[in-house]
Image 1: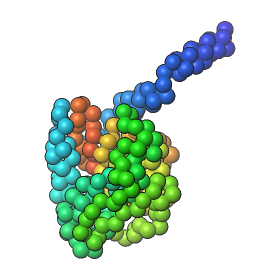
Image 2 (image 1 turned 90 degrees about the vertical axis):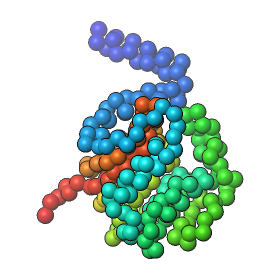
Image 3 (image 1 turned 45 degrees about the vertical axis):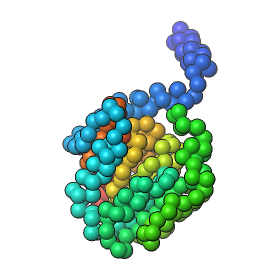
Length: 240
């Protein structure tokens, strides 16, 4: 009787998945990830909650609070951004982080999304292969998909590192999380679209590696956590 039950359940699931487009199935998984992640925000500070898109409140106010509270303004920083588009965010941080020895590297295909993402179609966010214009010599860009262009050996482990996750896609975000884990014991982070595929990637990364994750500040848009800042640190598995 037990085997018969499992057989019927399997048939039912196959029927549901046949009717449900795969993108909706992933949306359900993302919703479950959100529901299971409330503990990540214990002790965090909400900066804003907006029903209408307000770039200043949703992004800039969170970024500014993060920079101010961590006293980043004049420290030497290496800033890596994954998902550049027109370069607004990397140039914003370059204006706020003033040390002349800072390094800012932006990674992007510059031909748009490599696959569909939510309502955005493949190719959206394209700049036709052109890099953003900037006069800041500390900023450089790397073109191509991260899996082919990101070499984590360029990271100096002796300099404070800020990672801006703005890739949107689960696969891209998970790849970067794993590559960073290979080289860095700790780093600061900014997620631009946390409650979605980026959160699913973060949760799956945390299933593989035992880390300390502290979310410091965040904002909400339409009830969902959008921008979030904080720090990731490896746990000392083998204490001295």
